[in-house]
Amino acid sequence: MSRKTMVAYDGSPQAKAALRYALEEYPEAEITAVHVIRLPEGYWTLFVESEEDFPGRERAEAQARDLLDEADEMTAGADRSLETVIVKGEPAQELVDYAIDNDFDQIVMGSHGRQGASRLLFGSVAEKVVRRAPMTVVVVHETE
Image (cartoon, rainbow, N blue to C red; front, side, top):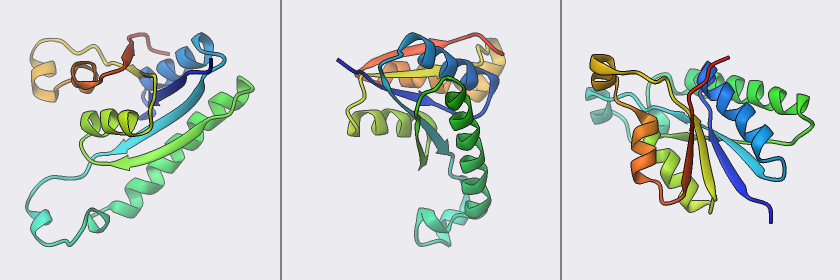
């Protein structure tokens, strides 16, 4: 049976390692790379009608497409196809919601492995996904 595997992809070395891991470990899986555009927070939300109107939207979407094109090139070398998706919002929540809504069997993602004060300041998307996701989550710690 073919598994549906979602890879969280932000272009970081950890995300690239996660994609490589998914390609190698799950050769029969349908793989989808998902990039989350984090919406800016702050007063601007009072002045726009929808998420589609946020400042810098076009530039953020172009950067996301470039990152996912890069991911697509990685899979071409592995002779695999890759579906790519862009979503907007808070990364951990959007990744879990997308995985649930699209019946993924597992999520593969990289982790920066921050510790101490930097982890407290920046939070951990991987940790939040692991806590919230009802499916298997594989966290890849290696870098390129």
